[in-house]
Each structure stands twice: as structure tokens, then as C-alpha cells.
Length: 421
Image (cartoon, rainbow, N blue to C red):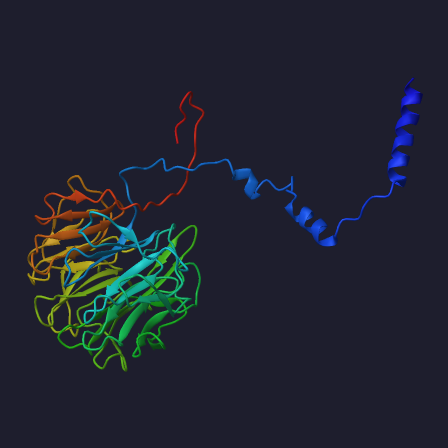
């Protein structure tokens, strides 16, 4: 019986092989082959066709905001530069937000500046300026001339981390960019760059070495040819961070960056780390600096002659690895804020300090915007997103609708019937 079945099957196969088959057109054969799913490829689109993704949170958290800028003529128009989510814009003081930097070459923003002569022109420096292990890098400088609707990459693509952008108040075509350079390696676009044609071409006007970039730059508002630049020698490794050295320091130019002099009068004599700079809008020639230094030289320094000579006011300084900015009050010359885990404020020019207060607010603050018409009105950017205060930090309102988040890891458990994420 088995033999009969086998012979019958064999004869059927032979007949089938001998029978002529109509030949399909080659083009159709190729189409059917390409349309056939590859069963060995689990990542083909068909695998996920039945999945429907939905947001599961977190609902009230946000992500690290590095910089906030407000349109000087439209106080309800704000821009937020986010470490891991591009740039967001609101035209109704935070009631709603629109992502305006989502299709560019990077998601990480280090600095953002509005042209004082034309605030619809926006400059963005990509690559966050923090130096921790989890840090996003960028691909240079971008410019928008229509309030963020369209963008152009203006170069410096190998800078990776932009510390600051400063625009000459007299000439919109003159822009300075403090490029920190790669965090994990040497080289790249590293130093202080200047353009005089709106970003078409760049000149490196301050170069230290392949290991030392420029982390901050400040223009004297009373004399815009006076430029201060902070050089920062740094290198991140998996096991440590080199955060300073003999090449770090403060440099000053009186001729728009043509010539430079490294400053020392009143500043720490030993090796220096990161320096944060800010001219006071409230008093001509007044400039503050937070200095990280060896041999107990760290602290808050003040100059009354546009950075020519310095005085150490106190030992107050933020954690320089993660925080960079010092924010002077635009209306009170002796009031300034240090960005750090818990923001501190001084009302006597940096001599004494007290906590601002983080009541119902996330810590780890990276920037303040202080209303030039009302010093009690502050907008803060921190690791928890954006907060607003109308009483100089006594009470804060959280913008819970800014949908930016930073995920470091995700996992699920086996709880039943509902699992935990």
C-alpha cells in the first residue's frame, strides 16, 4: 500500500515537471518577488502594522531647558531652547507651545539669541553646553529670519557644543559664537568665532588649542567693541571629567576681537576651570564672573571697568560642570543670581547670598529671564521645564504643557493584571 502511494506521487511529480508552464513577463516576476515579505526579517513594516502607539507619560514632568528668550516688543512671545527637544515657541505667554526646531540636523540646543535690532531673526547654537555624561551634541549654528518658521544651518558643524551667541547691538551682521568643541575628543570647530556678514563666513578670532574651546562670550553694551571671552580646557572620559587646566582663563579684546589679552589682575593665579560672564544692564562698565579655580580661588568676581581689573566678592559659585550662567538683574546693579542646583541671589553685588526658594519648583536651574520692566517677573528654565514667578521666586507656576522629556532608561515588570513601567 505504501509502495503504491509512493509510486503514484512520483508519477504525479514527473507529469507536473514535464507539463509546460506559461512564462510570466519578467517585470511582473520581479514585482511579485519584491512584494514577497521576508520572513527572516522581524523588523519589516508588516511586523508593526497592527500596533497603535499612545503616550503613557510622564504627565506633569518636563525636560532640561537651557535658555529662554522673550521678544522685546511682544512680551507674550517666548522661545525655549531645550537640551533634548529643540526649540519651542509660545505667542500667548505659555498657554500653548509650538515646536519650531524639529526637522533640523540635531535635537540638542545649547544657546538661543534674538537679534536686538530685529527680534524675528533668531540664532540657535546647537549642542548643550553642559559637561555631564549624558549630553547631547549638535551640528553648528542655525539662523531663522521669520520667527522660527524656517531655518538655515550657518556652519561650524564640528563645534558640537555652543556655549553662547552674542550679537552686536549696532550691526545685526556681526555675531560672536563661543564654541566649546567636542566634549569626548580633541579638535573640531573650537574657539571664538566671528561673522561680519550674517553667518555666510566665519573667522576664528580666538584660538587656544585643540583641547580648549570658548565656553562664554559677553559684549559690553556700552562699548560693543569690548569683548570678554572665557576659555575652558576640558575633556570628558567615562571614568572622570577633566574640568580645567593652565589653558583656561579670561581674555579681553578692546577692538572687536582683532587683538586679545589674557586677564589676571584680581583673578585667581592658579589653574582655572569654567568661567561664566555677564555684563550688568543696570550700570555701565559693571560685569560679573563666576570662576572655578584651584587653591580655593573659586567664587564670584566683579569688575567696574569692563573686565580690566577684578575683585573677589565671595566664594559663591555654581557647580560649573552642569551650570554656566550668572544672571544680573536688569534694573538693580547690585542684584544678581547664580544658576545651580538651588538658585542663590545676592543683593549687595555678590558679597552675601541667600536661596531664592524652590517652593513647588523643580531644582537644577540653568537660566533665568528677568523682565526688564519688572524685576519681580522671572521665567526660569530648569531640568523640570519652565516655571514663572511674579514675586521674585516666592511662588512659582509650572508650565505643565511643554511636552519635552529626557529618557535615560525604560523597563517594565510582570505585575498582573496591570504592569508597571
